[in-house]
Length: 193
Ligand SMILES: *[C@@H]1O[C@H](CO)[C@@H](O)[C@H](O)[C@H]1NC(C)=O
Figure (cartoon, helix red, strand yellow):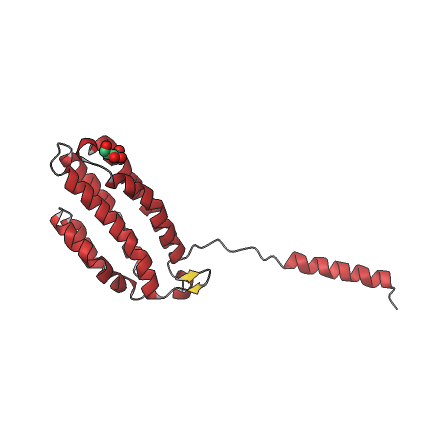
């Protein structure tokens, strides 16, 4: 008959084995789309705020170029995170801490990304239009806005119907872009939306 000490030692060993087995090596932390989009808007906002503050006197390449470049790199970072979701089930893609986001709610998170970037770049274009820097800045602005193309293309296959749900939310912005010389962007948007 085992003594109490032996039993207790056995229990200790068994418990140690259990606790050692418990923490399974965590999978690589996959950021879901709602978190990516929320972070993207948070990252973009200070930069778009600055860009929107540009007036005729400071609508120069020195001021605008680094801000436009920042927009491009922020969108590029989000693209990397979205690409990591490729092939994940929709429930994983739309997961939040509270459950799974509906497609409509996800569209409501994606739409501001498009509207803040496009409306900001559109307003800068409107300001620089009459400046000597226009020729230099127009392609830079175009590059920044075009960065959203690959992001939308990567998001599109992840959630069935997401871009269709976004389209009506950004329609007015898209229409105004055409007038601002962002025709190529409009074409691209129309092709993915
Ligand atoms: C541009 O100039 C305006 C007016 O002086 C100022 O309010 C704004 O902060 C400036 N923006 C940048 C990005 O320098």
